[in-house]
Amino acid sequence: MKTSLKQALTVLTGAVFAVFAGLGAGCSLPQAQADSTRYYVLTTAGTPATVAPAGPHWRVALRPVDVPSYLRGKAIQVRVGGNEIQYAEDSRWAESLEAGIGRVLRESLEGRGEIAHVVTSAGEDHDFDISVRVLRCEGDRTTGVARFTAVVEIYSAGPGAARRARDTFTMEVPGWDKQDYGQLAQKLSEAVDGLGDRIVTLMATSEKP
Image 1 (spheres, rainbow, N blue to C red):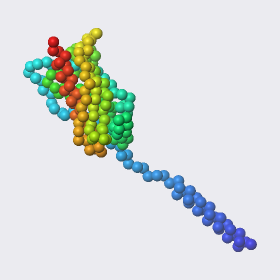
Image 2: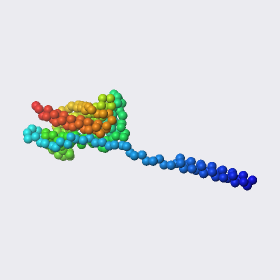
Image 3: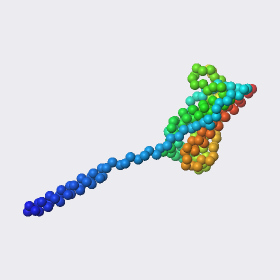
């Protein structure tokens, strides 16, 4: 009888040990995974500013850039159909898109000979106010282009300023391989730089009688 009881206790002890061993294995913490997120910025061509000896030297005020709500997240947007957008959650903008476009556009304008200064405060004297409303800033997965569209408006400075020019600017930069988001960011940067050219043209046209 004593032997049977001892055997039963031995079996029970082994079973309990096995249960706790299994629980310990099941509760082991998962290993930390490396963060695969990559961050990108828009950039300018980096051409040093040159002032033309003759011609206009405007001082301009760039209003805060407006973007639609679907572009306000940090994930880079890619269009895969007429009405379908995908967000690359592991490829993100390092700053808000409106801040990045505003920064690059300011640097782009300051690098042009026709622009004497881009003012940074409301109290500074200037010749024009520039308003930019972005409609698209994305890669197209179907065609492999970087597409940028914005409505730009030029106003004369001062109280009761009149609108002098308005244009819908669209630029498609081909050659995106549909995978490299650094390449996409560079091509969208080229499009924003192209908007700088268009703004200078609009200001020159608005001054003609």
